Image (cartoon, rainbow, N blue to C red; front, top):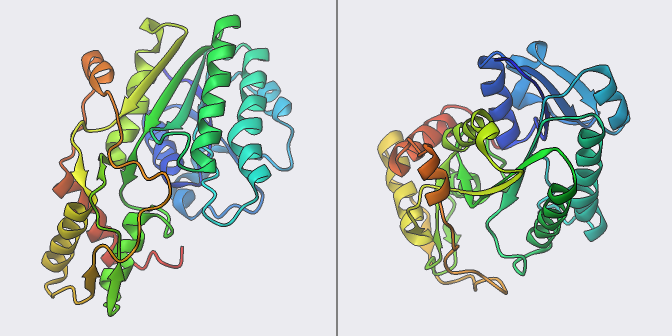
Length: 302
């Protein structure tokens, strides 16, 4: 059954892939963006969705002009561009609360939030995400809206941001820079392909009626890999696809771990697995898709 879905962060990595999948499933997709947002990721579907500029149009008007069945909140501020702390809190906490309150007032059935598996002590970003999670728990105890919290570790795939680790790494390797400075790479991460993350969101939306008022799911493959092993796998995939050797010297251990670095993210994917969702993309296959898309077109200027 088609639903009217309000999607935030639709011009971003996860949001754009979700928008595409929701449109293909026949849902009525309404997106929130900024008036100055670069829409290159959703240009191919922009005529099939309804768009509002969140910095121009009040949230209340958006909910008044159509009955929103589901809100999927993916908009986030990672703090990677030297944003002020107040900007991070504004996006990751205050905007989320305004969105949730508008949804509750308008009798929206379901609110799906995008969270992080990072511990709150790691960064201002992760702290703000934890604070919003706490607010979600509070609201779920007193209001009728159903809330699902999706906790992610490390997504990767086509159309990702150039300031993310995976894209940065590909850029460096393809550019044949003299050396790539890295940490020792002993951290273990759960790298999950973007298509599998999208499938997880669509899945919980489909089974939401059988879930309690508040649910939180760790979204991952359940398999951790050392960052160093991931880097070497990326190198091998790029060499195979390009048919030439990756020349940069990989200098593991030159960069110290950041303060509060978590060496292995603790996750429990069993709850989501037991409901019937599982990832479908092996890491090697996902990397091949990602690298082919990257070397086939210049994404560095996007």
